[in-house]
Image (tube, rainbow, N blue to C red; front, side):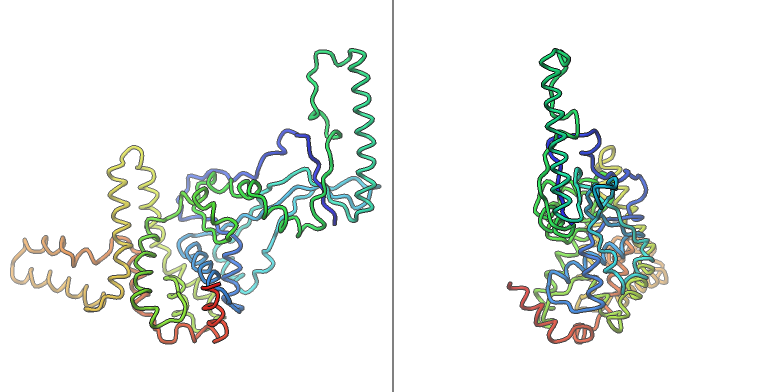
Length: 413
């Protein structure tokens, strides 16, 4: 396949991009994730994992899958006129960098997550030929026709037939110029799309317009995260991640040879083997179903109130951030686990009632003890899962020594 672009002309609509309809539905219902994250998750099942970056991508995929009902992804695409031969009319096609076929081991999981892909068309005026001989013959015919049209216009202008008409080279698509792009469709995406910041931005543009969270892991897209991630639950995850990093630096680095992120740690602990990972993620999705709905209800409520009632919005976001900040300290506290802590809390209430000291119940409810019972259900579920992690064999249960060594080496490359 030989690809050329026809330049120097514009047709109405040809410079448009794929549009995602702006939705008012709750954010929990849908999110966007790049295929890079989903393929990393696929690799966690099939192996081998060789880079730390892959583990970070897996964590991002897990957050999309666990904290949203359905997962959608955009894939870059371009519109082409395909010539099988010059004797046949060209076929108008949309070609995408589709990698859905590479998802096989996690296919049932993707079905559970209502997995759906969208083509984001970033380029037009692409002409595709089976071979260079056909391409050159068509371009030669095209240039001859263009020359003829230009000569006719010059003659009409000389005779005054075009007087009063604004001259422009954009009136007819037979006035463009052909520029060679690539020798295959795969080459187009690797050497044209991925190296063009303009096309990458055009590809990402529909996501913020759709009004849904986006989870990006591809290095090509991550630098534009501020552009597309304005609907993301950063207030929750940022606080959790900050405390998790402190926990890693103070404790985990002495137990684990490689960094493991929060949800990935839970998944590895719960799964009996790598082949069991997809079904365990489905179980996590079901476990977090009401929790994610509640979390997103708070986040959406705060966003809606941010203009008309900023004080209430601030209180909501503060509650979410405080709950997230307390997850790691409460889960890994050294003076007792959460269940004894809750027992102590209810025990104090019962003791107060038995003694007839009713006023002290109010004091207890406002104490630090009461605040340990989180108002965000997702925080409670995370705490309970963290407390069940068996760190000693977390890595050896799933990764070979060679994989762990490769991941360790990748941290310094």
